[in-house]
Length: 465
Picture 1 (tube, rainbow, N blue to C red):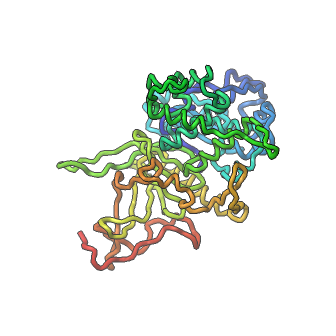
Picture 2 (cartoon, rainbow, N blue to C red):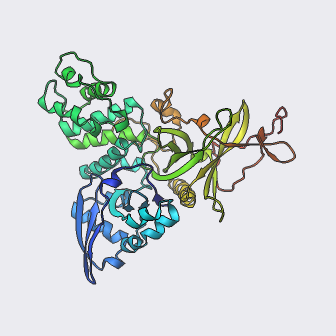
């Protein structure tokens, strides 16, 4: 299962459908429930479930939903519970993995024994972590777009995808358009907007106010910050227009617009893992401790997200890091990320230590994503056109995403909130920093002539400690 597993960072859509996917098991037939991103159920009556592969179940789901061939690569089957998420390979046998679930929890989570005994996974039809965004933009089938939209929406509302307020408002406005139709001042349907604000904005950003729909009705009362921004964005949602000027009004246009907005997020389509990092020492006693984080790994890179503050602590493209994992018998498993940085103005190599029982899984996933990217480079389109059907260059530098570089954006790295180990080379050996070295500790890194990661050189003025 290496390279295809993820772990939720906080309660999300998985918890809504935390129920068994196999209602009966017999020698010949079984009723299997497969859950979609909107928590609807696809019931399947299958023969010989115990030996059925994920590929065969995937095909059965596609046939029931009448999905086109594109769905074969766009979606995968997952085993999901509040404690663990596992994307299945086509050859995996879901029933057997479900029977092994307690062993998987003991191996890859720190869950208490009581929780392990009670936990039971559901079978879900979700986006494939290895499906590139440029291929997603080529999809024209409205039902496939809807399923992708529903999953992305769930991740935004659960704050698994950290977003700035204005981006949350823009995304929420598109959800309003899908659920309520085109904005019309004073329409009675908009009165449901305030009561269901958490259907459009992440819960931690919902700021309710008694004046929102007085403002909707033109009475001039002041709405809450998030509410008013959502309302303003809802008013500005564009409709699909054909070449003859007539409005199409298709939901597919708005599904695609939502996905395009999500594509600006560097961690869109990622797998989630739980972990902890060291806090910087603070106070007179130099107390540090640890903070819980989510490690989001996608085809674009690795992001470490603060579970409580809902913002990025560190974001690295694969060209910007080296990595490895350690699993000593008497110590916690650790994923190590190495990247360039500076300490008091001096260039250093930084090591971030992520404590997690899924360190080996994360390391394998990073390696597999790099391999896929290298194999797919000649195939990826490189177009500069814009619009809902454009296919942007997947290797484009982040400077082409100005909104993600706004000051204090939640998607910008906050390295000052991390405790890293800094190294330099002093000409005789490797020492901590005051620190530096002439080569990476790790052999696992992206081998390409376009690496953004560089090994820092010795500095004569650096003091050693």
